[in-house]
Image (cartoon, rainbow, N blue to C red; front, side, top):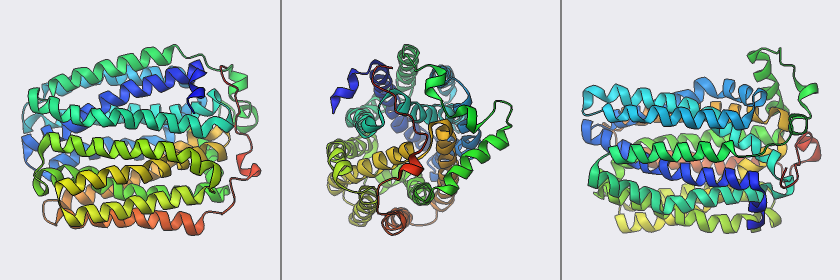
Length: 418
C-alpha cells in the first residue's frame, strides 16, 4: 500500500495534508470551546460553524469551475497562504463583542477551503494511476486519522493550558509548511493533465456554462446521482453533530475540553483500522456495499452512543464509529474520481460540495436554533437517522455492478512520478 509514496508529487501532497490537518484539528477543538466559553450559548457556537458552511453553498459551484480552469497546484498554494494570513485575526477576539471577527475569519477561510479541497481531490487522478486511486485515497485518510489520534486531544490540552492563542499560531505554521510542500510538487504537463479540455470546454465559456457542464455530467451518471443524494443526507447528520457535539460532551457527558479531544482521537483510531480494511473491501466488494454498510454502521453506532450517554461508552463507541466512516468516505470519493472525467472533476466535486453544503447549512441552522430549546440528544439522534437513510439509499439505488467504462470515460491515468 505504501509503495504509492514513491511517487514524489503524491508524497508531497500526502505530507502537506498530514501537517495542515494537524493544525486544523487543534483549532477545530479549541475555537468552538472558546466561543462556548465566551457566550455560553449553543446558538453562538453554531453560528461559528454556520459561517464556515455558507461558502460551501455560495462558492462551491464557482470553485469547481475555477479548479478545472486554473493551475491546481498554484491554486492550492494560494489557498494555504491566504488561510495562514487570515488566522491571526482570531487573536483579536476577547469577548462576545468580538465574535463577529470569529465569524468573518471562519467565513473567509472556508472560502479558501472550497477552492483547496476540490483542487486536491481533482489533482489526485493526475498524480497516480487509476488502479492506485484507492490506495492513494486510503493513505490520505490514514494520515488524517493518524493525526486525529493526537490532534484533538492535543488541541483540548493546549486550550485548557493556554487558551486559543498558541493553537492559532500552530495552525498558521501548518498552512505555511503545507504551501511550501505543495509548491515543490511536479505536475504533469497541461496537455497531459487535461486531454479532454479541448472538447469539453473553451476558456471563453462563462461560469454558468461551465457549471452546467459539470451538472450535466452528474445528471447523466446514475452512480453520481445516487452518491450525491447519499452525501446530502449524510451532511444533514454531520450538521447536527458539528453544532451539538460540543454541547453534548460538555453539558451531557460533563467531559470538558480534554474529554472532547479524546473522543475525537478515539474516532481516529477506528478510522485507522478502517483504512486497513478499505483496501480489502475495494478489491472484493462491489462499490455499494462498502459505502452503504459504512453509512449504516456509523448511523447505528451513533444512535447507541447518544442513547447511553456515558463518557466511557462514548469513548469506546467513538472508536467503533470511526471504522465505517473511513470505509464509506474513501470509497465514495474514489468512486467519484473514477466516474467523472478529469476535465470536469473539479466541477463535479464543486456540485457535491454545494449540495452537501446546503444540507449541512440547513442542518446546522436548525440545530443552532433548536439546540437551546430541544433535547440535544434527540436532535443528535435524528441526525444519526439521516445517516442510516443515506446508507439505505446507496444499498437500494446504486447499481450493483462496478463503475462502468462508459461512466469512467475520460478519467486520467497518470503514471507514478509524472
